[in-house]
Length: 206
Image (cartoon, rainbow, N blue to C red; front, top):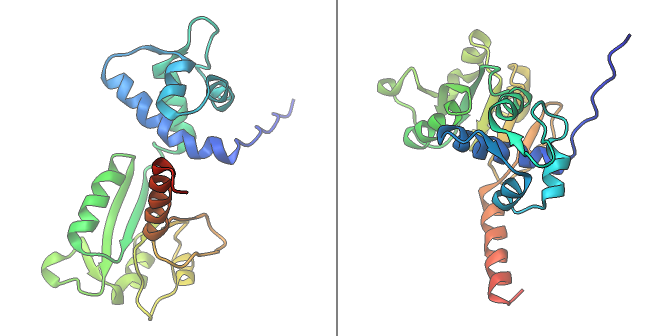
């Protein structure tokens, strides 16, 4: 019998899954074996029914009166999120110190950063930091899945990244990208403005 295709998760659930992942990992590290939908809901600022809706597709789904088994739920969520896919990445723009900080955070999620490309990379910083002028050549030799885009020189375009085999882009620039690969447009300026708006709401000024 042909296997029935799994219904895609909602966009809201997909945005919440990394937060579930982070919290479940914290519980595992603290030796917690079971968690209730109410506890998860409180941590994520959603309702228990929303938690149950988000997680009902996973192994280790909750049992009424028992809650969720943390380890199998974490394992299945990790698999769905691709935490074990051993993805590789490059960071474009910024300086070496920013790139190294980002690299550490990505590697904590199973993504290995191969190189950082910038306009002012020096020979002493190679092979981690390299000039933009060798980006195409380097990506032709080394397969990379993700690009974290802080900036690009005028000599390169986002389409060049797609042509070089990049499969997904986290775009932190102020220009939204629409490409034939997955792109998350998350400019720092937008995040700051949202935070300022939230402060106005909290102050009763919005």
